[in-house]
Amino acid sequence: SRLVHPLEVFMSHKVITFHYTLTDVDGTVLESSEGREPITFMTGIGMIVPGLEREIVNFAEGHKQKVEVKAEDAYGLIDFSKYVQVPKEALPKPDIQVGDVFQSNVSPTPFTVKEVHEAHVILDGNHPLAGEDLTFDVEITEHRDATEEEVAEVQEQIAAAKKAQEEAQQQAQQGGQPPQPPAEGGESPEEKA
Image 1 (cartoon, rainbow, N blue to C red):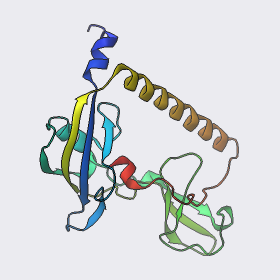
Image 2: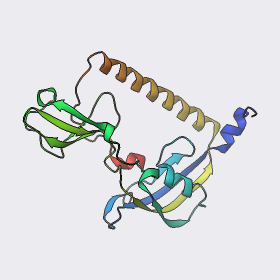
Image 3: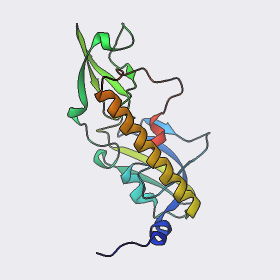
């Protein structure tokens, strides 16, 4: 195998901007960019779900289409290893209910309360849309080559995020904080549309 010249890697990235409406298998609207700015992402670095990226990378500016994405190519199948049992007293509020959401310092994905028991709760660390087949109704508003500066900026952001996550995991392994409720205005699922 040959080494890829850095210019070839740079040339392979595209910047795509699109409006979307996300629905589940029943046709219920889960998210939409209607009335807001469209989503912009760079291809090839995992900014959006892989099943959607694989399709829209081939769409020209102005193209409109419904894209069906199976769960394994969207937010993944449900991973039961991401279910954790936590003592109630480790959580930041006393009146825990099924459906409550907590943010952890070791995972970018929030934890959702699945079960409440006398002394503990079961938290689910899967993405809220894990296990769901989804449909994205998209309209491409821009499709262009990424600039060298954009590629460098995104690579820096990825490196910084990876370092922050590693530091959070090390802190957690050394007796860090229990899951916390997400901050007001926290990241919503459309951030990874």
